Length: 450
Ligand SMILES: [Zn+2]
Image (cartoon, rainbow, N blue to C red; front, side, top):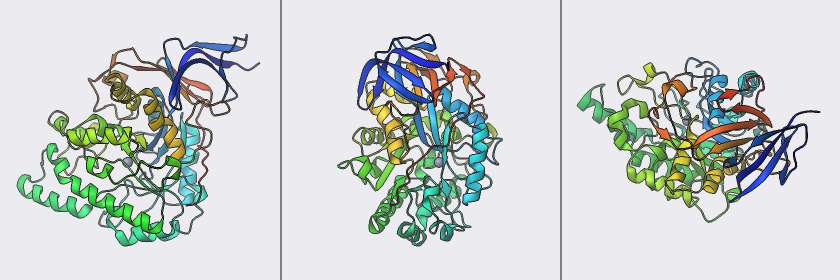
């Protein structure tokens, strides 16, 4: 008889409550939740004094496969994700080649089926070249479209900076449109001013003044207005300012929202005070901003104006990061520690475990219409992570699993540890040891037409 996992006596955190129970996994799914007797063919995992969470769904990562695999690939980065309790991810289209056609999307699924230890879905990229094709496509084939990391015009502008094109997309595209929201004109003008003063070597601390609040706010406001005009399904990626949070609603359930947003973990974790010590290592676009923004983002997460938490995991080599301002790549790896970061806020009494699970597990599944994932429910896929809320450890080079081999969190001590991670009922991560020959599944989604 096939081996089944029985997680005994664990504290389940799910759908707004925490309670002690046993969970039986069978055939990839959660078979039963309750008080369950041990049978001879059960492999028992003792969950005493540990918390069982649905596997984290990270709805924005850049795993760099295909084409940029010197930075990371679907194997290395999904492995790091699983050690961090992440069981599913949605990857962005700015690989080489960019994922701009259904054919390249299929190729990426093919690569993932042989390399990814976690479950996967992919955005279709939209840029200046393929927009006419995108608006004619059958949207049931992709989980959403995004411009994140792509150059929208030859000049390098973002979609958010091309109102006419954005209008065309919003008027016609039937899928979720996930955009990177910054106004390039404002950024370019600020770059010019700072270049005049500092040349190429602008100190990192000016990054949030160059990529400032106004640039984010204006772009987000305009995108929301256009989406409303066309009744489009808009998702604003990685919000960074307190000001923008007030542009979003919290008076209707997520299921009914047509305009949603997210915060990335690093924008909750770092502030502009950290540029002095970490410099270009924390150069992200949009930029890490002020302490007040950081607090405003957490407040908006708690009161549901922000719907989900992502990492925007974006590995670059240290060499690519440690260059002068204009040459240093934006982005950093975060996927191995996103849950630990959020649990640190829990330890500080700033967020509940139930809220973390809502924003990292339930809501990404709801927002992207994922089938049978994101919840601890009988009949759902057994994507689970077992965490110890009282185990200290420090992020060091030695315990990083990223191909790029560095993290902006090196030296950070966490008070919680991810002990085990199950993907589709398989114990893929067990106290530092991986099961490496079982791959994740493509995420099934119900892509309703908007
Ligand atoms: Zn991104």
